[in-house]
Length: 69
Image 1 (cartoon, one colour):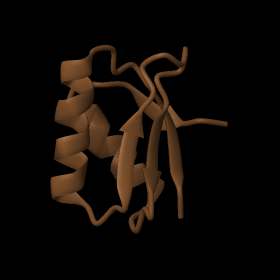
Image 2: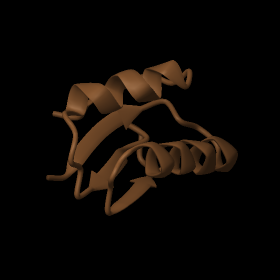
Image 3: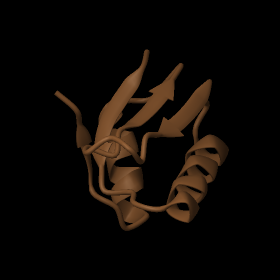
Image 4: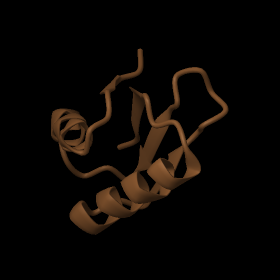
């Protein structure tokens, strides 16, 4: 499954920290945050957990996160 989320991750440093945190906490294929997109889209490939778990995890890291519709 591919998870696509709207976030407020705004810097290269925040992006790198969030990607590392997700990759070390969940079994995922790849993870990317598009800082050029207005929705700061977080895309997770091969997501093997429920989307709400990722949303809660990202929010606990201090960022906004919601499923992009």
